[in-house]
Image (cartoon, rainbow, N blue to C red; front, side):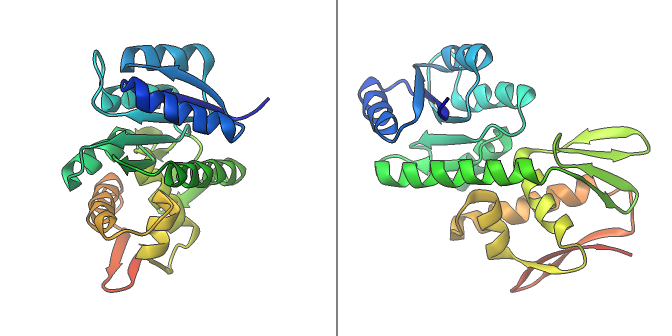
Length: 226
């Protein structure tokens, strides 16, 4: 059985073009034209990767992604959208997106990003484990932090960043390397987003004062436990 991609896009002409292109590349593609239909198809048939518009009738892409994330922490989601501000991108990543492609886009770029995300998915599945970070246990498979038996879920993006930092605990991880690990590419627009997610991780780990995520200015970040 081939790789299944769910395409959720309300622009019919664009949907047809993207669908034909993906099928020519050997992917199995199912199509939905709004968030409600997309969510129903995902729950019924699943998918290895989702490509979704943001502005859609009945249920927008962000809301759909949040529902999907409740069912699956590791199904890659790429948003296609004309919304291009940093706030829009941050909202998309917070909703559970793995990548964000601005309209208009080249089909070749979409294919490159799909291949990169599918490759990351395979690697991540093979590396699922539990890290001990101070008093916390970090379950990479379920994207949760565990402290004294209490579980705290972290977002998909936060989990990717923490996985990279935890695997290199006590060492500085270059900011560019972090962004490539998380988004598959290093872009200036992602640097503010990366700093924001680091801040969220610090809050998530705040109950152990011996844990710190240190900003090595001009280089990157280091996860440290005293």
